[in-house]
Length: 128
Length: 141
Figure (cartoon, each protein chain N blue to C red):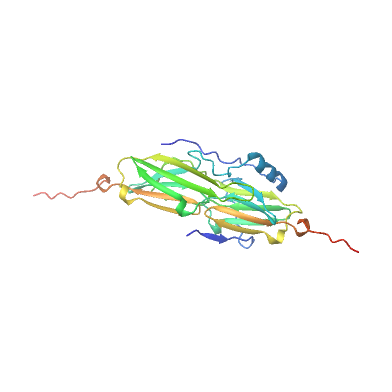
């Protein structure tokens, strides 16, 4: 069963980035007729660890990696970074900010940024 | 043991405009950004304690059925299978990436468990009973 949670942007419980530094996660932006889709990889983050904020012209995603090994474990080999993730995207008039939706599934955050109505192609009727 | 380094993304404050991101996407081209079919494309951590060895692998974005964990010849192999469905302009694409990790001999391969949560695969390999240090009480007659 895939875990899928809706993490639509809220600012009720801000997730302050931990002082472990924040790197930009791997992400990509795609486009379809109605929206821009931003997919960002934030492994290790559950719904409570991800925060999406629209701040003026910027879209900010903070994701925390807060797993730590139990005391009794000895690390044998370590490659996983222990930094948090922070993605900042500049929004412009092409995005309808009210309709932004966020979804988190197995460590991949998908943001849907709907295109502004006036930019969608529409036919103009000829009067007269 | 595979010592292929995982390159963490550049720690930069990166407020590019959406148009720049789209340009960058087209320059990079397909295949999908995280599905590069290169061994060692995902990072792993290996820990041990007195009872077991634990391997954590960051493999975000898969379904449970697309992750295969198998053991053969003292090596653990983690395979991720990704299928991107055919879009309007892109063909259906299936990529696999896998990583093999050498294991010590004293593990109980029958009792391996794996869990996949939040994009992190955790494989727990218990050590064999007879290898664990045991205190044996010997009765002295």
